[in-house]
Length: 176
Ligand SMILES: C[S@@+](CC[C@H](N)C(=O)[O-])C[C@H]1O[C@@H](n2cnc3c(N)ncnc32)[C@H](O)[C@@H]1O
Image (cartoon, rainbow, N blue to C red; front, side, top):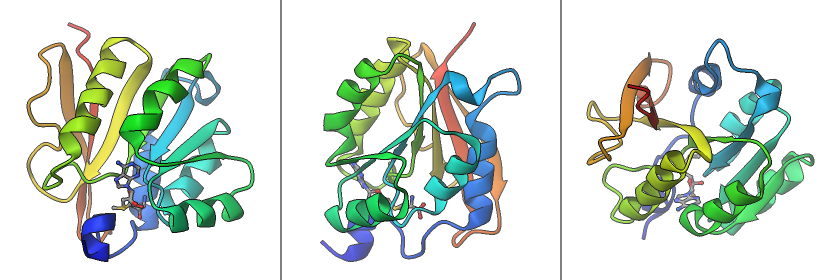
């Protein structure tokens, strides 16, 4: 597997993408201190850095040991879990006294393993343990294919200052 397949992109996300992701993480009526933020796939930490400017309860899950060690040394005040998100997430969410919001940097389209992580995202949303998933993608299509009818996917931003330009989507329980 090449580094690009392993990581999902040649370039790290831009700070504009990181800023926009952070902005859509909360709705206007929600308060940062009421949520735990779980970032999946922090890589070299551009998005982690932006999240830390708004949130103080952040945990990350990174499968690549080199990135995980880098994040651990760069950000001393966050919990870093090493391994696959699909294995760690249920346990982390279960232990939290607050609802969680997941900022997912794992490529879901064109990733043969993504059905596993999508299944975990969908069950945690339906169990009300996770409020929303925030996901970026480079393609026009939804990064959340074949979602359960109780959930709703929304495309909320286009970020042109990123290589390549990215769309930001959210996935939540449909309130209707
Ligand atoms: C596209 S990179 C994003 C890196 C960084 N967040 C950014 O936006 O520049 C995807 C990251 O997710 C990690 N990753 C991929 N699949 C994963 C999984 N199932 N569980 C945890 N981390 C994963 C990769 O190791 C990589 O660091």
